[in-house]
Each structure stands twice: as structure tokens, then as C-alpha cells.
Length: 224
Ligand code: 5GP
Image (cartoon, rainbow, N blue to C red; front, side, top):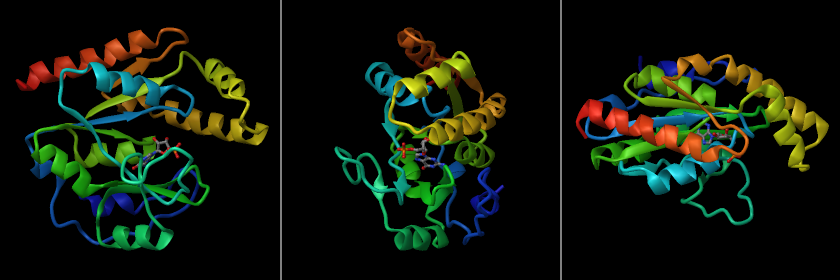
């Protein structure tokens, strides 16, 4: 399936995504590196776990820097945390076929997308390119790139996730409910990932170790 077909779909929030031009080259063409997809519900702790995996992994991991239309947060660096684009620039790039996948995440009018070139250049250099993207984006990438190592990071339970979200004390009740609804939608699709890792409270090291083990196993399988 091509990226064109992948991106003309309806998101869980109901916004439809029009088709875009066919890409000139495919991620599947680039066989040197590996693609690693990591997703998980908001509050599952995937960003912190991943940071530690980057420190400890034996593989040449590199994070793919996504593009987004959401406002830059204090402390975030353009080109490092995200490529922060205007709505117009994002849509121009989408029409040009620059994205491997892109979606309106959370249904709040902010777009996020994986830049095809960002991934291809890493793969060509023999890197293990890590995409930390949401489930709808991950499913799209998995269809185009079935060899991808896909990992779903999840909390022990939805109750635990709810407790963590409430402990942050930064979210309104409405936001907590929205995140929980989205988490349910994501958990229903967790079986589509090749690996599932539970990030239990107080046991982050175990989750980090499990992900490193997955990467080592994959490395042995492909002789890298
Ligand atoms: P945040 O705005 O908090 O940085 O990220 C919000 C959500 O967007 C997270 O679930 C993150 O995984 C997801 N996300 C980040 N980059 C991408 C991307 O390129 N594509 C998709 N589909 N989701 C992304």
C-alpha cells in the first residue's frame, strides 16, 4: 500500500484527511537501517522510558523529529523537539507528499506528521530510526512498512492511567475524560503492535530493559 492510500482516512476524532500526491520514493526501498515505532496512551510514560532506552541501547538509535502545527512549548527547540510549522506550510508539505503519515492528533486542530525524508536519511545512514507517534499514525506506517519493530507502551490498567493523569493536577476533568477515551481507543488496537511493554508504577527500569531486549533480539535476527 502506498502512503497516498494511507493518508486519506478518517481519524477517531472524525476529521477527514484528504488524499495527497504520491511520494517519489518509499521507506521500504531503504533497507539498511531499521524502523522502530513506539506508541502508548498519554500518561503511560513512553517519553521517559524512551529517553532511557536511548541512553542504554546498543543499537544506533536516532529519533525522527516530527513536524507539528501545535505551538512551541517553553524549553522546546525548533528542529530538535519538533519542526514547528505554520498550518499553511504543513498543508503545503502534505500536498507535496513530504509525510510518511500525518494526522490531526487529539482533534484539537493541531497536526502532527512524520517527515519521509527524516526517516529515509536515517535509514540510509544505517540508523535505527525511532518514531514516537500516536496509534493512528503508527497503524499507517505499519501498513507501509510491515518490517517495522512496533512497540506499544501501556500502563498496568486504565485505573492506573486515570490516577496518573489526575496526579498531574494540570488537566481539567474534561481533558482527563478525553485522554481516557482516547486511551481506550488506543488500547483496543495494542494487539496490532509486534510487542507490548507494561510500564508499571515504580518499575520503569523493567520497561526500559524489556524494550532494550526487544531491540537486541531484533538485532540478532537481522544480524546487525
Ligand atoms: P505532544 O504535543 O504532547 O508533543 O504530542 C502529542 C501526541 O502526538 C503524542 O501522542 C505523540 O506521540 C503524537 N505525535 C508526535 N509526533 C507525531 C507524528 O509525527 N505523527 C503522529 N501521528 N503522532 C505524533
